[in-house]
Each structure stands twice: as structure tokens, then as C-alpha cells.
Image (cartoon, rainbow, N blue to C red):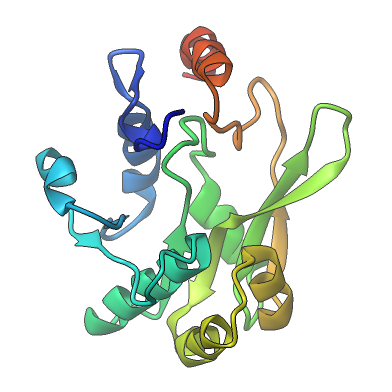
Length: 187
């Protein structure tokens, strides 16, 4: 998508991230955005913008640590993470992750186009108490959220892909066009 913020792309009457926030906000006590670079581009959301606490922009796993650090500072015991380019995430994401959670949290999974169940570990519920272990893994060079979920012993919550795949993400111009067609169907 040209290297910009996919969440800021137009979709329906707003932007992709507006749909994410609208679905996630009623499920959470507080929201923050994980992003590197100039936080001013997110100023109109009125949400804290958390930079990765690990240098070199190592990806979503560092964003989970940023969320854990922020949550710890607010006395929260868990964080929920979701990707900003997935406008149709489940409206019951947090409740179902909480039900599936183990001491290592929980991640989402769902069927792909062929019906195979795939993990979507970016969508997770993570105990803040695990942040030191996550920081160690990042320092050791781990970058994959799926590996972290396995090491943490995260449970799994399966979500249906009907009427729309809740983990559909916008990666290409064609995906954005598909999302535009699906935005009304997804409700």
C-alpha cells in the first residue's frame, strides 16, 4: 500500500481504523494506538499513541510489549491487541478471548477461504504479568507473535467467518476495494 498507515486509508464514511475503534472501544476500558514515527498523524483520535519500546521497529510483537507497559502503568492486569487494518474484527472479541484465556492469555483463530482454521495471534488477550518474559524474547531476537503465543501458552478462541471474515485485513488496493464492498454487509 505504498508504505503508509493502512489504518488511515478511507473506508465507508471514515477510515479503516475508525471501524476498528468503533468495534473495539465498547469492549475495552481504554484504548491506545501503537505506532512509530510522528504521533501527530493520530491526534484526531484523542488516544494515546505508544511507540515501540524496542528499537528498530521489530513489528507487532513490540507493539504488544508497548501495550503491556502502558497498561501496567495504569494498573491493568491484561491488554487486548488488534490490528489497525482489520475493519471487521469481532464485536465479541474481548469476551471470547477472556473465556478462552489461560495463564498465558488467548489468541483468535478462524477459518480461511478453504475452511482451514488459522491462528490470528495479533488479536490477543495478554496478561501484563508476562511483559518481562516478552521483553526477554524480543531482546533475544524473536519477532513472531505466533511464537510468543505458543511460549506464553495462550488459549484459542475460534471465530466464524460468516457473514464476513472478521480478520480480513487491508494489504492491497484490491483488499481495500473488497472492504468497501463488505463494509455494509459486515454492519
